[in-house]
Length: 603
Image (cartoon, rainbow, N blue to C red; front, side, top):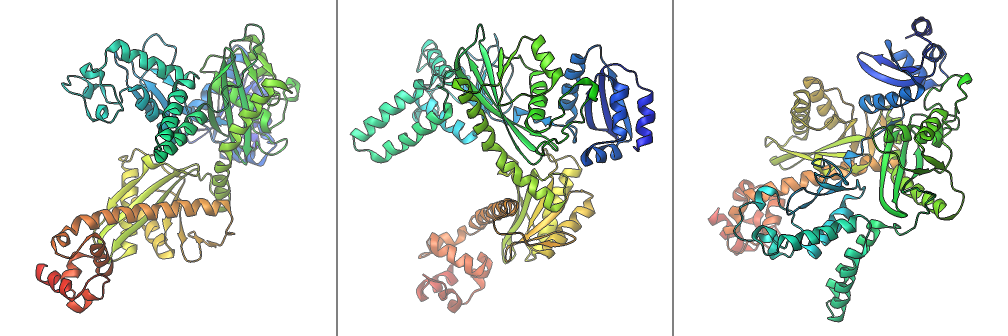
């Protein structure tokens, strides 16, 4: 839309509160709220930032919704941003992608790590009991295993639990007390489950005390390796609750207090939330937000209300706080108090919180200030990795580079050809989204890469791949591999940017140019991690297949696993070993004349 188009649309709008959406081809680009819709929308005829100007240029229409009050507009805006995830808004990512711990609603509850709980959350009268979300899945796995070893809570499905006549292997391994066959009475089992719940509610001693006793006993018995393992597990368990013992001083009748910390890098922001109940820290989580323009002083994260509204036009941390508070708490119960690192500066948000009797404080010293510092540390731990994605997107002139898929092929002179497809999200490996593909045996890296990318593209276009489309594809190789990959994408019609990373000079190759970034560039390190992981995954799969087809060598006297590997590494396949001369076989380390003769006779 041009300036005249915006002005014409604004003249037709009422001078009432409401929400407006800039749309393009049926997609919501931006959602905003207004005290006066006509005046507010009209201000976009002269945008005050390059990013908002691009948004207005892309838009082909403006939709509005009138509300009775400014507070209704505030909450409607938050819900629309959550639903549409518009590119030009500060937008809160869904925290369901973080792992949680669930105790199921069953007479003998099972414990499991899940990203999608079965039903109601903690505190409900029915349904599972859910704790989290947590940000470190490996730490959660260690804690859950330690709890199972200590309290014997089952991890099997309800289907496996039903109708058993003897305990399963978990019981033999000490991970389950087998309530299925009444090796433990249900009453005693439920008491153990209650102890597990108490641990997740903040009573760390439920697990740390028995672990410490077991560690000390192992050391007394001079079982030093076991004692060291228990020590490492104890440290992980203690870190799980971290500084959770730090008391939170309640004011008046305050029971629930949330502490927020914000860290911003580029156009990415992380908000860490700590939850305290009855003076004890019971939960912590981190949320990522898209915050376009938030890092710059005075940046326009959202194009704000007119001067007459008195709204604070600052960007940065205040704008992120205001956006997070509305979007996060619009769907959740508000706490009795919020502790913030600085004022959010949004009068409408302040009025809403005041109407809900939420106390908002920016502590300067004491226990509450320590908790705000802790929240800031939690936020800063997450934001750095996201920045390298932003740097990569800027360097390659992409809209985003959060989700990257890497591809590589592996074979031995054309045999056991395979392809790998790994996924990284926000700079970290997303192993649940790894895929691998057996390819037609041929000694042609270009054709193999073409086949691998065509397979991935067809699955995406036909809706047979349950993963979201990536922001970038990374090909392990040079110009030839990249050209083969892009040909496959064009043939199938999957429009995703692709680049290659050549090993020799660590050169990033795009369709138009090549980049030689500094060796310490974070965005280069990101691509190297993706490239190296795709290579490792491909080689691992290839070796698995190659070992599967080489079992005939196992029957040859004098050929052990190491010699077999050396033979296959030298000749590439069992067929090539069969065709090799005795002299060629003897050129392999560990194969003498007698062994070479035996190989020829047996094969």
